[in-house]
Image 1 (spheres, rainbow, N blue to C red):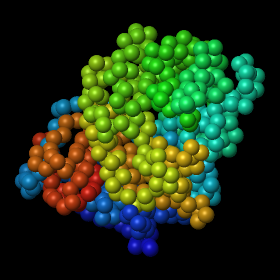
Image 2: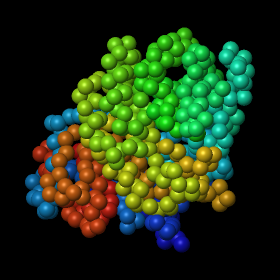
Image 3: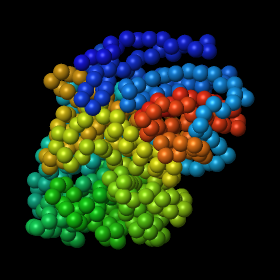
Length: 510
């Protein structure tokens, strides 16, 4: 059922007019999605510092009720009084981390879904993520070889058993047909896009695999060949015109120790540290890739204390690695305070969330229009940012209605769901959470102090100052009722904002 036509409107206030391309809404079982095709998709206006002159305040609302980055304008007097029970105090004198940005992952299945669309609709989809008119993703994570989000189980060199000299090395067909074309199109839209790589597994013939649990680890005699395979991945992508900003030595190294049934490979921290320094780094340097940003862990928040201690206690790795990569899947059972502890112990190392998705593990678990899943994203991003995290990267940039393809059966939901049969794609509520952060909290923004006085149970907040001086306050309401909230900034005054029930509101002022 269509509940709103895609009509271009113009919103004017305080002498300013903003072209608005609204969501073409479609009501689904779990809520509203925005429908996009070859000729139309909604866009969010990029507010500039100049547009916030003369005390203009702009705010964007996405909500359970169906708002999708709905733009509102107001004007706040310098001495405006408080008018609410809840106050958010913004204190830019308290400065924390500098933000790196937000992004998503081009798995085989994600890239396949993008390429399943017509060329015009594919272009429209990629513009949503990567263009200046879109949400301006900073990062793309690129798997090395196959993952569980592939249509088949494979790793690079799987079909060339015993070829330790890599005589027959090549990338997979999925690289040439799907990932490389999508990445090149994304880079054409955003030339400074930061790509980082992560391998899931060496080929099975290089591993010991437990026949009962499928847990696996790399056999020592293949330490050097596997490092060379990883290096050749970068070389072949470079031949295709694609360069990388960073990498991690292994995706979820602890997972392969307990269940390696799909593309995974287990490592103890000490062994992965030794392999990285003794084999991977020397190979990358000799091939001219020594300047990439190395991140450690690439696993759950629960492992941050022990793994950072092992890696950063080593002086060589401490000087080499730039940051710690974290996944969100244990965030509900491990408090974010471990991130602050890691920052305090190693303040020169950034923390970056490199994988997150809802709806994993249950085949076909795509909840079209689910605000609850968007709220999970908002809660997690705000919680992590308030504990020194510099950015947050989603899993697949696109899935189909089965949450894949996913050969192992552990599907996943995504910010965009593709319907290739109709040549359309649907932007989930999760997309608009990612949009709020990625579009308005730009790389280089500084996370500053924010505190809630009043409804601390239902309001989650964080605040930033961008390099152009624009301040951004994110307000996530988990309440079932709307309320008026006052934002107090001693350098600006009071801003009274109506916060809808179950919503994410992005407030901009200067």
